Image (cartoon, each protein chain N blue to C red):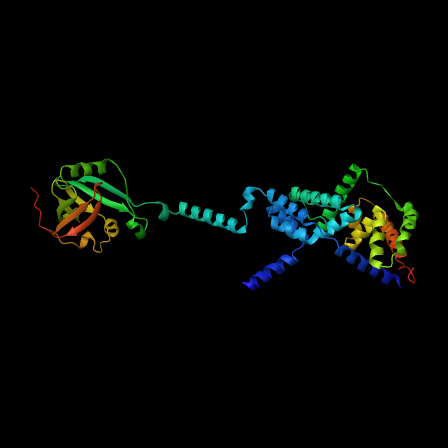
Length: 199
Length: 191
């Protein structure tokens, strides 16, 4: 028997010797149990899937937070002035970030002008349906409502209301009904009705 | 689906012990440790059993893996994971044997006596049984050097595990094999 052969025999005998030995299952179970008990609860849920999900949520939140399209509501404002005929003139406008926002509830920019418009509404019997007529004011078409004054409605409001034709396409003297809600916001513009003659 | 599973299992199979241990250290995911236990558990237990008895081997085996678990974040890939865990196991075992007052530092010069006592084993006709008994009767340091080499560890790694010089490891190996071959009558023409 050569020395190389005897080395091989020793190796084979050793392998055979090892085959008869295996770690007791109780020891194996204890090790695994110990490993699980040592895992911090935070890490228990942390794997690459949850890590990716957290990253995606944080990224999305940052994107939404920094994008006015998603976190700003349409801002409704009223401006008041006096025209040459000493009439109160109210400019109604809404700031839309995009057209998709038109269905969202608007946020009112409350100020003295807005309060003045509300005060004017308080004088009316019917505060929700304002009958008026299309007139020209300061070279623009507007709506004259008796006991309130002249109301200019911006193109943005027309868009928000989903009205295809702007005020500028209306005819002078045309009867108009402005529908407003409890907050004084124009919620609809209805063409037609009887012509109003303010005294 | 089955293809994905097979690729996954293939990847897991080929992943090195060192990589698994590093992942375990980073994530504390017990699945990585379980793979390591399945790969090396029997080897380690066999080593410990060869150097002690079933009760001590089971205790030290568990204690060793618990040390691996507790020190999982301090593992660095400076050597093989196998040599790392065998080193932990060896020191833990020696501490335990010292505590039990069963630790005897038997070195090379005591070989003659050991060889004589082992000669009784030759009477056994079955080679495997002869080997098992001969291995059990080898001095502690020779047996551990022989087993560690059979486990695929390099001389340098064995030297680190046993905290000794490489030349000493070579001597222990030479004595161990000579004794085994002598008792098993494997030393004919080659020696």
